[in-house]
Each structure stands twice: as C-alpha cells, then as structure tokens.
Length: 202
Image (cartoon, rainbow, N blue to C red; front, side):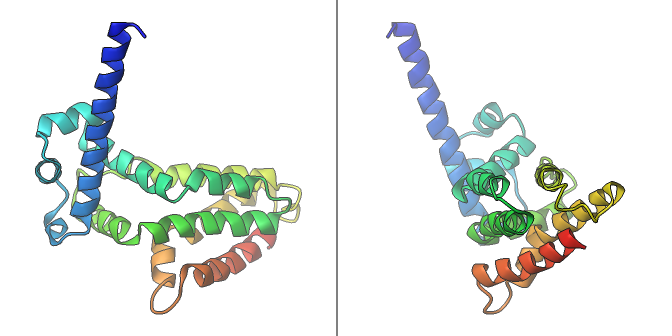
C-alpha cells in the first residue's frame, strides 16, 4: 500500500470511529432525562467528547445526524434484510406478514429512542425525520405493485389508498399503541398483519 493511501485509510478509520462515538452518544442522550429539554448538537457533542464543529464536519447538519441515527436503528434491526424477505415471499399474505414483521421489529428494537425522537419532532420546528416515512411508503408501493395480480379485485386507481392504509399500519405510532400492556412484538405482528391482509384483499 502506498504511504498516502495508508494515511487516508487511517484517517477514514478515525473519522468512522468518531461518527460511531457520536451516534452512541446520541442514543444514550435519548434514553436520558436530559432529552426532555430537546435534542441539540451541543448536548450530543458534550456527551461524545467532541466539538460542535466535529459533528457538523461528520454529519453536515443536525438533520444529517438524525438521518444517520435512523439508519443506525435500521441497521441494528436488520431492516433491509427483513424487507428483502418480504419481496421474496411467494404470495401476498406472506409478503404482508413479513413487511409488517420487519417494521414492528425495527420499532420494538429501538422503541424508547424512536418515541423520544418523535416527541421532540412535535415541538422542534427545526427537526426533520429526513424523509424516513416516505422511504417506507416507497417500499410499500413497490410491494403492492409486485403483487398486482393478487390485488386484481382492487382497481389500480385504488391501490394508492391500499398503500396509505399499509403505511399507517406499519408506522411507529401504530406499533407503539398496539404494544401497550403485555402485548409482545410477536402478538402485535399477528394483529397488524391480520388487518393488513384484509386491506390487501379487500
């Protein structure tokens, strides 16, 4: 390896370690009492032991930090692999069960942190979820399109409505509400998937 390439590689490793430390600090912040006062770059920088400028250099903006935080949640829940299983399902009912399971697992795995982020989004005008909900909608749209034959009874013009309902059913808010009390993730998946299947076949 050339000396310059080696130096660049070491620099990238250091930058990746710093980003990981910042993301870990952000997660710990969200589970702390301090989160009640708002999500700020300064608060995360203090927890991570870095400067505010370091965070902006690594993430470009507060929205960029939040976007990568959501991406880390998705990675922790193996979301892309689980979505892939939904698209490899042989029929509509299996596909809907798998896509519901994929998103319920994401929400269950990161429930407290996501609940705090969504609560902060309601009171912070500068807060953005970086289009994560729209990415989920695009996944659902593609899944519905893949099973167009099974949805033959549903007019093509009504399929966007099916996607809208599935988008609501796979949202964090639906999971968080359904998972109250003693309901575990598996039971919530069964309940939501049952409704989703009725929607898909109506």
